[in-house]
Image (cartoon, rainbow, N blue to C red; front, side, top):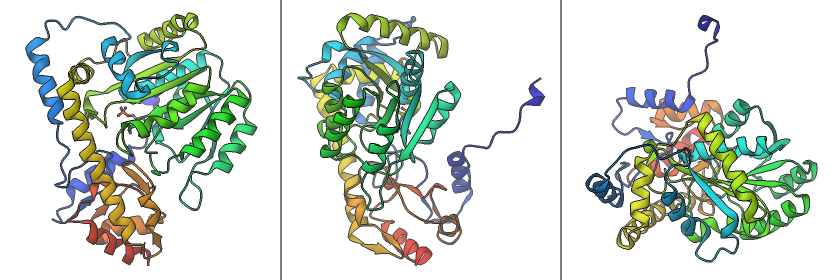
Length: 391
Ligand code: PMP
């Protein structure tokens, strides 16, 4: 039986990591893997997380099962961070812990499917796992172009997608720091999107995986808050893996907003049943560390300061790239207005291969670069290589 399985292609980014490790050029640059890096090229554990983990070691008195919803104190502690302190419809929102934002996306899509959603619309390009999850769930996907020529969001394509959608469809939107393009919706775009979704009655599925890495915790959530204040129902997948640096600990959540408080237990019971069938319950450790931070004022401040320094560095690199203006045929100026870890450079496959072979610069085959892979020490080399390869 198992011999009948066909070979699956290796994950392209993992293959890139192997190539990078095997390269012995001292000045090689990794712009492939999607993790934050400091100016020294490291991805350290947050100091606030280290302290919270120590507290956890000292205080945790049991590792008995929690249940499919995971650590509900973690889910509650995140609410003011995500929705703000005065979110009017907070009583219409319930949540569950999930294994990473990936688990949140999967549960949100599975809930939408269970609720009878016909098609989930999403802008492309997107985080590749979005499409893979939909395919695996057997959910039909509708796509529309995300990035306009001028480096802003393609609102005309989004308008058309909403017009083409059926009333029982859903739409998946990145909350901030769009992966892979870095192109976010402006506040005016969010306002228009809110109106479009309300008129059509589409179910929003919001993916907030990088809160705090764009313009700040409040600004980065402003769009999703606007949509959720105005619409009767919504689902949100949330990740703490980037903004708490917990990647491998798999920390995330799904939030479910229902029309009235009375339907919430029904929605949540479906979430719990789906979680049970998928992973039974989420891993505890990272979420418990996040909860310890958010329940402690001093640790929360320390975490926010660490997050701010990451954001500042990312935006400094963006500004520095934009300052370079045009490198060969690549206009770097829009990068200053885009946000988050990623940007897509319009390079051909050959040009991307030449960046690797001639300059030891590793980037995804899609032209996506991890902005945080650049430092003040290697950015000039990168710009020079880009000029040479694309000029
Ligand atoms: N959504 C988007 C848009 C992402 O980029 C990612 C992470 N790459 C996720 C969700 C999932 O994150 P996690 O590692 O927490 O599963």
